[in-house]
Amino acid sequence: MEEKVNNKKRKLSFNIEFKATLIIIVLALLIVFTSMIYFSITEKRENESRYKNLANNLSSTVSEVVNVPDYIELRDKVLDIYEQQEKKPTSEEWGSPDWNEYTSKFAEIYEDPVFIRTRDFLRKLVDANPNNDVNCFYLIYVDVARELCVYIVDSAPDEEACPPGCIDTFSDVNKPVLEDPEYGFPAYTNNSAEYGWLVTAGFAIHNGNEVVGYAVVDISMAAINAKHLNNIATLFLFLFLSVVAVCIIGIIIVHLVFGNPVRKLKRVAESYDKDDPETTHRNFVNLNMNTHDEVSDLAESMKKMESDVYNQINQLILMNKELEESQREAREMTALANKDGLTGVQNKIAYNREEARINALIKEGQMEPFGVAMIDLNYLKNTNDEFGHDAGDDALIKLAHLICIVFAHSPVYRIGGDEFVVILTKHDFNHRKSLIKSFNIKNKQLMDDDNLPDAERISAAIGYAIFNPKEDTSVEDVFKRADKFMYERKRKMKGE
Image 1 (cartoon, rainbow, N blue to C red):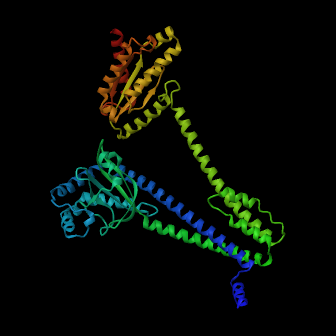
Image 2: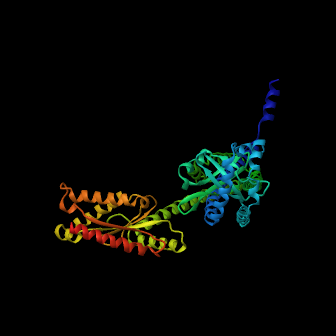
Image 3: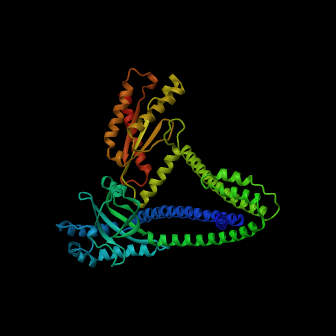
């Protein structure tokens, strides 16, 4: 009886050849699946990031090239019908009687020449996409009061397109646009029953300074993911064939070699740890097989394979670090090249670059309203002569600090020894008079502060002018007027 039990145990045991072969197979499969998981996750993230960037770029481009007067005309027609409807079912009720009745009210829009022209233009943009990644472009209006998105025109095929007046509710990720129309719809992924898995992005359409709507793009991730799965399948096939080849070689070697060399090789193979590549690499480097047979060859092959993978990983890490360092140095060099060494504000080089940029926009008729404030420190020569150049430098630094505090939303430039320029746009342009007044008040407080040393009681004159598109052809025209007003202010202050 006891002999039968022992025979059964022997039958269930595995010889060293089988065990070693099994280890090789398991190790190879581990590498395969680890590599597949890694490349699958990496490629998926890269795809999502790449198509988010593409969606942002495409929606931004469409917002720039769309015919704004056509869009406004079409939007107003759609909103006239939209406002008259007591019931406003959203796309979540797509196909319901209420939704069908609501969308039928916009049937006349389909025959409108402006609608047809705008829709066909958007479809041409879709067809122009070389990789056929774009699902559709569409133009929408945001009803801020009701927190709804209203479709104006959709370039999708007729049977798939959202009809004019179609309503979407806001998801949390898009609600910032309700507070800030300029925020738009930064690229995000969305997987819904109505529209499927999409990458969506939208940029504001401007009529002058006013946001009148949004150009939105949908990129379907279904085809992209199918391509992703195809790549994974190809990778799996390649790795599978590689594993088969490695396993065949391993079985032949194991068949010829037994004992300690195999067990030693087994221990090293089992030490593979993708989360601890340094320890793994040291283990493989310290693996010395002196059997001068197939086991030695296998050991060297495995060491080379691991070394190639290790070097490749290190090379990728090094390249990434070098790229980050290069980008950091480039940013620092750019900042230094455009920075005034004394005051810390931007310098004449930066001003010339900004002037050229604005001049180009003026020439194209796309420049938003702006103004130029010219500021000059009074009595700098007297300060240098009486208190020394260090005191003069301190006065310039103090003036620059005051300018930056008052005009906190505008770029400040030092263009000469005691001359500063501020380009006023948006917030500071709209509040320019109060800011100029604030500057003069704060400057007077410094001048009248008896607790400060004489050298720190700075005095500065300011003058400003705003861009007149009917008369001005360049920033220089606005600058000259601001400079003139500044000198008038300077003479008045000296007279006082």
